[in-house]
Length: 259
Ligand code: 5RP
Image (tube, rainbow, N blue to C red; front, top):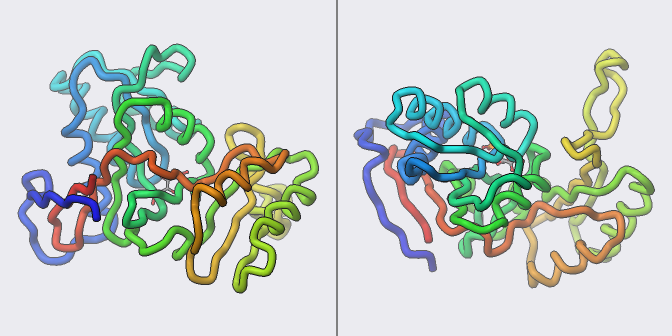
């Protein structure tokens, strides 16, 4: 369905099969070509977005870009952007966001996304959904026929009563074969790596991970509404109709831009 425009990968000739990390860098650099001096940017989170931060830092230091400011989508991105010299401001102080650049966990044929397996979905959705263009950068392994095909769909929940909220989330998919949901946990440092504790987001919340046997069938907007109506759910990682374009780096090193 989306119109595809193939072009060279940032002037890099296609040579053999590139590693996934190289593909992430290629997609990130192509998106950064869309940045103009004076823009306010949404700065994404994750390993692909990290390549965009590095490239932006290079261009700012070389003064090929001037007057660019970024709004970081996570504390990790804030630290990275500071390290590479990207001036930043908080969301509340940005008059507008011109362009956001971020990775994704999954991209479906309608350019709906799963995001937030890195745990930053709430700030990402607030910033990337606040207007302006939202350019998604992925290697082609992220293209899926249906959301929820390749792993967890995260839901950010408040810690209070999280077991109760988890039960309500399960009810949304009652009887769906192969569906499961659980609280995301990490090994605690205090427990010598043996004790699991809830993963805590930058906002002090927890994450429920939803798993689907064969991806999410059905009306995504309806599912989104049902999840958001649960008191205790803060936000979910389905980014529906938000991406304005998706820069896909293919294994042969070429880049396709989906609109
Ligand atoms: C973080 C995200 C990331 O964009 C997503 O997880 C993709 O990460 P990566 O580029 O490392 O594959 O949503 O919350």
